[in-house]
Length: 300
Image (cartoon, rainbow, N blue to C red):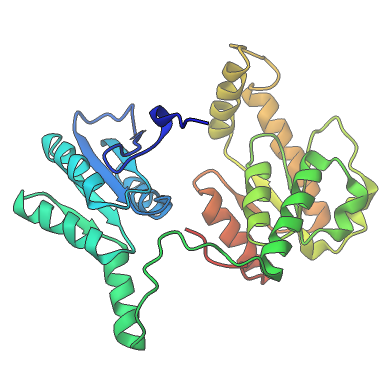
């Protein structure tokens, strides 16, 4: 059988993902960044996103190039970055790629930040052990890995309060009205190895008896600000092709739901976290701290 070479990636065909941040920023300033990695490149994106959050008035244009594992790939990427007057962020396990990118940027008066190089070098100096130099090393299929899979399966099955009889098996039970990040928090925490169930709170619905029968230390209440909830709910309606729903995204209705949720939290005597100004990662970390839990492993 002949090979279809039109779909094969070569060192001269880097794959690009175009991203934007603060698209509606009030400032006219736009900063360009090019992210390059010899692995998936999530470290680059997470690192930059954390910094971007400090500058909500600036528009950022970002190009991400994962799996650039040859110097032949770096050359056109860096040349394009130079033409765009972009800063370059690299996370390379292979030192020759890091050195190539840094040399190119230095010669062309471009800003370059190496994320992996200094960390790997510091560990090598402290330990006297040379790094593997294998980008994107896979996690071993050990007990921790399978525990995470079981936690994910449990959390997906117990989303939206589908199986109250399984609350007792959960490590964490999240409560909250619509748009308080219950589902994304459940999945994020499950990926850290915790079995999570979540239960939506609706004034017209009756709480399942199981919520009063489980260990109260498992329960976390989630809340949000009225204006943030209204914005999120309007966006959700538009995603479904609905411009307005007087009940779902009405301020009075939202305040009624929040009041009901607070009554439930008081009744259960559970801690409450306002997610309005927090990322999923921040909220998950706070939940773990409140419950005295430790994440399964660091994930970038």
